[in-house]
Length: 72
Image (tube, rainbow, N blue to C red; front, side, top):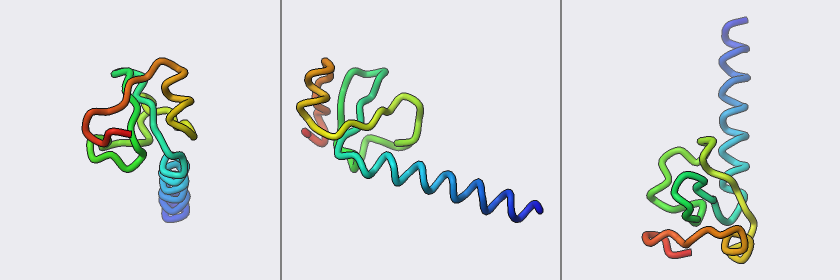
């Protein structure tokens, strides 16, 4: 039973990672910046502070500024 719980937990974690990276951009709700999902400054993309968006225009329309590292 314990192995089943561990396997299920790992599967949920991996599914969440896929959702974050499926989007083109991630908004950082704490810094007000947006990043490419692959930006090297993002250590934990599944953190509650990151919100996926589909386009650069959507991020800008919501008032976010582009990251200075990945320059989306």
